[in-house]
Image 1 (cartoon, helix red, strand yellow):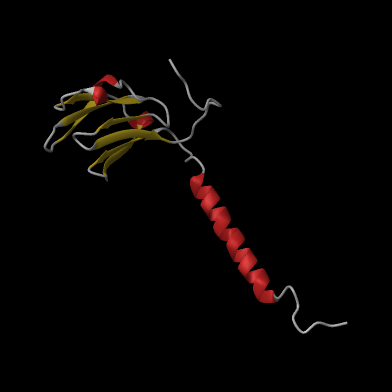
Image 2 (image 1 turned 180 degrees about the vertical axis):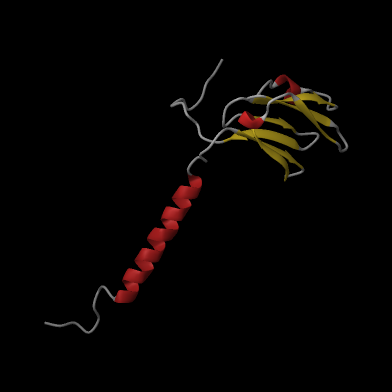
Length: 128
């Protein structure tokens, strides 16, 4: 017995394939980035500089001017906030960032420093 309204049409297959491709693209964009650890420095929500930590051969400072001045120290394999004119100094006490996923933020200056790249260890987090 033939039906006038089949349950599955060619258009349905097209919609299904398109949805699968979009879901796959969304999943891939969610995955961690590959590559060497890279420092991303942002001020007022805009990227100021992006530098691969393995490409740094000698210490370098980057001064970000604004209402509150922040000095960032780039060293081989690490980055840290060296000085800030903010009152609490939490960003300075964060210390050196060396692994993907680490970050330091100076909220009064609206400056963020984070490390992105491939996470090579199987550890999700650490305390202590």
